[in-house]
Picture 1 (cartoon, rainbow, N blue to C red):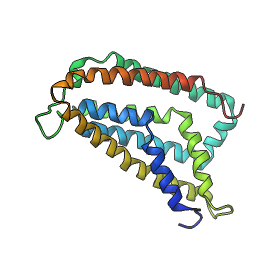
Picture 2 (tube, one colour):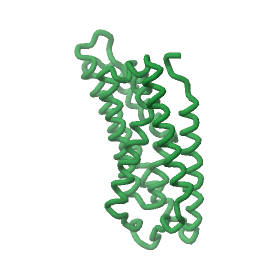
Picture 3 (cartoon, rainbow, N blue to C red):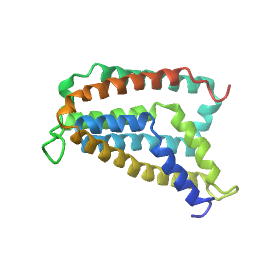
Picture 4 (cartoon, rainbow, N blue to C red):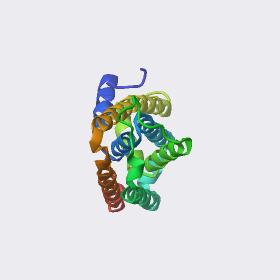
Length: 218
């Protein structure tokens, strides 16, 4: 690819980064174990859609502006932190009945369309409202763009698209493995309520960590 340095290293680094557990992986795994592979894959699609927003923003220079502005970073940081805490509280307060999965069937009980939409958009906003994702793309992708390359913004967009496609494959894998594991739990499935509790606590901790993070321009 013209204008790109070490494409193979870029792909390998991206795959390793996406295999590392974080808020996105936790969101996918939680929904896949609770409601099946379809829900987990929809969660992955929502997160991927959120990444596209950050990629476009970074290519257009919006992320650089945010990195240089304490006010812009702080605003998005607090909104994102509040949303992560909100997601965590919802998981902590979820009812055990919502965790039911039919282990005797080939697939988990299908979720309602409205529930699937909620999973998608919650994943989307969880990603979009996290300024750390925007700053990640701003710091990571330019390392693989050839200095002086023609139309660097376009090269950035292409690399971001490649990163996101690779990430989607990894995230689908997380969803499939998590759904398979949930079906293997058999009679222990009712104990999956603790998955929500643990995930809720972790989302709250992610939100608090984000709220306490410093602006990159300080």
